[in-house]
Length: 446
Image (cartoon, rainbow, N blue to C red; front, side):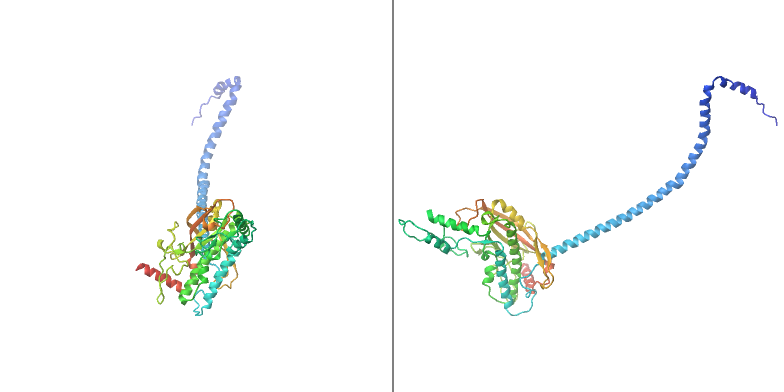
């Protein structure tokens, strides 16, 4: 094989021009070095890309998959915790609702039916009812208008001019007495001069002696039990149960009045001036104007509100005092009664009184036998369904001897509902009441 004919001298002679142009040598060497570096770099980058795709990217995918699995597990755990918390809240709400109806009883010897044939237990219940109302009112700082004897004594003892003939005080034949019966009662109407000033002074002194005008006879059930006569055991159990419900209602009304009047010094600056009545049947002029159907048990006469004006469960619109805006009626879970509250209230405090009436209140529960350790519960069972108010006229005979202060006052009339959780007291509800409810439903279906 022939050796290649390379003319090195010729090549060197051609490159000899670089001796004269040394400045070109630097970039030439840079280009040559770049070419030499580019080739292995390109080869290495391809291998690096392949390595990243095979190792790092796949590893990242595996990590992402594991993270998603972890997220799914964590999410499931979070949902489990959420649902458990939701269930706890629901159970807690249900427990609180039941606690609201677990209240102290006036007698732990009657409920449920003890098969006791003696009337003493029922008479004892009636005494506890009336004394309980009196004790509730005593804590309000009761005030009373002057009595007839007080007015007469003051007028008779007042100094008179020798030119004035002695005369009897002015009396009114038209103003009803506190018992609701019309009769002769002293009135400031027709009085002038000294007599009127004397009566005004007595009225103000009476108003400053307490925080609230109220009388137990104006609260539902007080006169009922005062005149109560035993008829039958079934009747007696119905009386006790329904008036136990009524007592809880009145207890809350009195508590609301006491709370809102807590800072008052007397009637003159109290938000609620006078508690006119708490009733469970609409009345006008002392007569029931709404009759509620009631079922009758076998062996006893049918009862109506003409002879039994106690609370009753509202199962439909015709049972209530008004059509409830809440739409609540007695059903399998809830039991509802209606009641009416009438009060003389400072005009600026009317809304505050309604809010206080509907606020939560605390009670102590010692079990349905009364022997368990006391537990503090809260209840909030009142809703105002309907309200009406009218300004109090100074010349109105109902307010003649009452003094309410200088601020405008209104006659506030509220129809309210009171709710009970049926499951909370079903075990102590007398069988007579359950039968009464069933027979009432049968009567309505006929």
